[in-house]
Image (tube, rainbow, N blue to C red):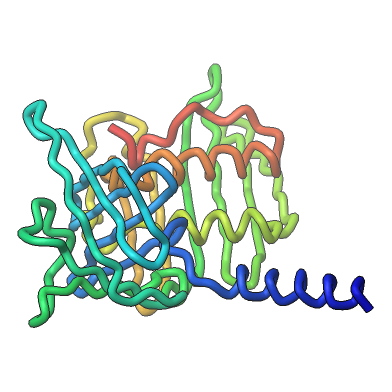
Length: 255
């Protein structure tokens, strides 16, 4: 009987722990597309193409969070009371005047954020990119969609030969891609990038999500909070699926 009671207590504790909402590891989005990513040690705020990084001085899951940042060698610290926290909504109230102005406040001087993972609906990604390998030009075409279909075409344009790889994207790979794309606001990025490098002229990226289509040509500057992660994901994914020794970077979003 004692073992049964102990087991029941463990099961109850497990479900209570798992059901509690978490403020970290979630991309929260404000009323005017302010993207707030909260981690264990730092928080990142994106407003359009502007980017700020804060240190988390202290965090109490259902009580408050304290963010800090150095400004001209002076440390600024701001406390935000957690008014409401569920898996889909976060409401913060700044304690006093807010140094950082996280997002547009409501009439009660509260910041209302929603969980973007619950609202972001990935549809498909299409990438074309060319680079020179010795004397040849290699063209890469990558396609991934929400049904987890994946297709990679590697074409040697000099010999006019192509190899096609159609192994499906794995669950953890797909989840990683969607998490990266949902963690930043790509709607604010100019679609026509600068042609400051020759490689940029051979770059084309299309992302379909929710009811939007974003097309990037040339060297488009991606937000700093997702730039490296997105670039590394694509490079690693193409290499794993094809074994191709891909270039160290893609010119269309890094400059």
